[in-house]
Image (tube, rainbow, N blue to C red):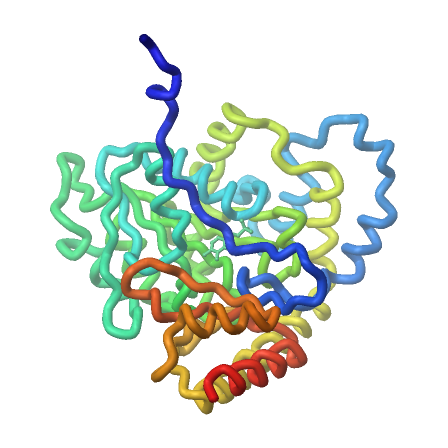
Length: 362
Ligand SMILES: *Cc1c(COP(=O)(O)O)cnc(C)c1O
């Protein structure tokens, strides 16, 4: 007898970091920003007239698109916006990766990439990172990228976070240029979720490479993970193709208060820079503290540190921190299962972390 269960789409979903419900915990597990969003954003949301929600939002989110365009000095037709960069990345996968050739990404990277590839039926090949989780640009170019297909494409697309997650390591823009220049037949997506905390943006390359798409998010550096805003910058043809897919799927992605607050967030550069600077200072101090406690880690340019201890296993440290109300992230994938990804919090939160670690490590 026919059973609908046999016809369900089989996917292995992404597992987001744990969101504890209890108050008073120290949450260093999902790379959120420890500081509140810009005061102007809070004001705009408080002053929002809920009666306006009677109407559909602007499907083009033009207030936000125009604000982002002027912030980055690009015309609005080179900006795509979505519900967090996860939505933007999913749209980009759907738009640019047709399954003709496998796409490439590092074997140690954002764990959502293989999930989207699976969901959309896109074949992929993971490229091993080198010693110390280093991404080697040469592995994504020419013969390093694999055998060429009938269309002279070594691969069907590339997606790479810069800085990478969870290592925190950044590549210089010259390496990104090598990858974009070496793959003119496919789209190269650079996920700059953490670029505001360090590393060199590849945005200046956009004028030169029409196959380069740069994806950004408000979730980390702009303290707005709960609002859900992400965007992509690229040539007008790339952005048009993404909008065609978006309007074939869901026209009203961003809601009205989010569109307004998202534009507002770009107006306070001084606040933005001051919170970034605090996080970078806390991160550099954390490197010294964690090294002193016996941890080693790649030199992070992001708002987290990917650390392993010379004596005590990561799962044990993870569990004992959790018992003390401190949450960090532990991944169980082979090769990274003895590491903890620790988000950089406030100085106070980090002091509590160091105190707890001293107790745990004896
Ligand atoms: C956090 C993160 C994202 C997703 O962020 P959104 O909250 O969906 O904007 C995308 N890529 C990387 C590498 C991330 O770490």
